[in-house]
Length: 327
Ligand SMILES: Nc1ncnc2c1ncn2[C@@H]1O[C@H](COP(=O)(O)OP(=O)(O)OP(=O)(O)O)[C@@H](O)[C@H]1O
Ligand SMILES: [Mg+2]
Image (cartoon, rainbow, N blue to C red):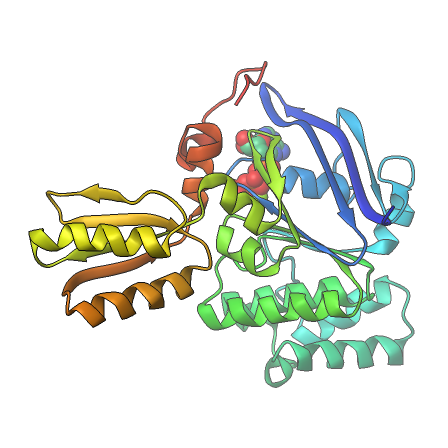
């Protein structure tokens, strides 16, 4: 059996009449990334707060690095690094001072704390801003400083609550490569996100959470297969070419093409999307068939939700009945 860095069994937590967690189970094998994927209000942050000992569950149990989060909070805190949903930096301190302070809190000697702070500032492209109060930082810089803070003590389990929300594309890519590096160095990562694409990029396993329950889990490919995966869609210029398009898409796809005669649009589920796309384009081009539009549609979080729950993700924040109800 592979070792588990995190184990969660039947966690429940209510705030008044809101059931934030309604029996969440999950496991993270050591050295892997788990993506906890869900819309606003799904229970991601509540799960994170329980795992990082900031919140007591009403029922259920959780272990981090072998330690029970309720019975052994100190040991859990030593093993874990958290970057919360909202960057927790001291605005009046400089970037260097922020990280130095975290190092000292974790018991590093002065010189070691300073060296570690400098190293992380360099890694997160903050060296130039190191001596400036962090209140002068942009949102993305603050986010990076907060991420750096989570890594000061070189934790074995890193928890990142929506690490890329609010970042620009460059910041997002930076964060993704930082997370990949962490894992290459042997860390276990729990990452929450609202983006299927992000979980797809980074996570070995994904748990989809809605109304405080895990409603699906698996690898990104397994989830996509479950919800139908990618679709290739073309719109042909001439009505009489619809039949030909149907033939091409049937050949490159993995299911029955769907035709909309009126819009001259044909679509089909594909696996290995770009390959199918290239092959289809080659065939259309070979026959001189003109396309008005061609698209490879990846499933979005909305598709996942619609398929798994029968309701769009936007509904998720509405109040839930105390019984929860079957999805
Ligand atoms: N301290 C609290 N008091 C009252 N209700 C709370 C509290 N914390 C969370 N909730 C409620 O619990 C539910 C789950 O919240 P949680 O913050 O875990 O969601 P989330 O998945 O992190 O959402 P988001 O993507 O918006 O961050 C929501 O309905 C939220 O309003
Ligand atoms: Mg949250």
